[in-house]
Image 1 (cartoon, helix red, strand yellow):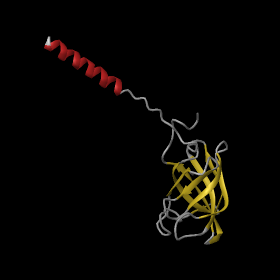
Image 2 (cartoon, rainbow, N blue to C red; image 1 turned 45 degrees about the horizontal axis):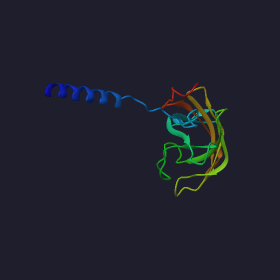
Image 3 (cartoon, one colour; image 1 turned 90 degrees about the horizontal axis):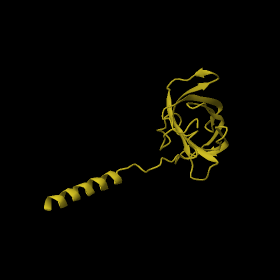
Image 4 (tube, rainbow, N blue to C red; image 1 turned 90 degrees about the vertical axis):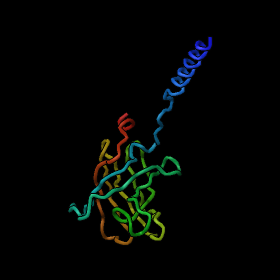
Length: 158
């Protein structure tokens, strides 16, 4: 009799473990995933490739609603960015996968310059391009263009 109780307990324990191990999580994506990602870009001025690239930048949703994204080159100070030490919020049209700003303030502490991002666009699933002008170099328009390093294949293209 004791053996039957032990077997019953083992069967119940196995059933409990099997039921509790089923994956019931549903992966949720941010509304910004079609334009959000980690990117490797090169910098061009007048169509001429500039030395030093490729650079890492990222685009991601802001916490202010579904009308803007951040464009960031991983900077935390005015001297350690991958490209220019910038983090700027831009307006986004998620359906057209475009983004721009007419002159937002740099969000990097201690580096309060204005930054203009124009003609920002994600092309297809894995290409990005944008023009950027920095207040401390206002006569130069940089064209940043490259490809996505981190992709969201489950979402993009649906």
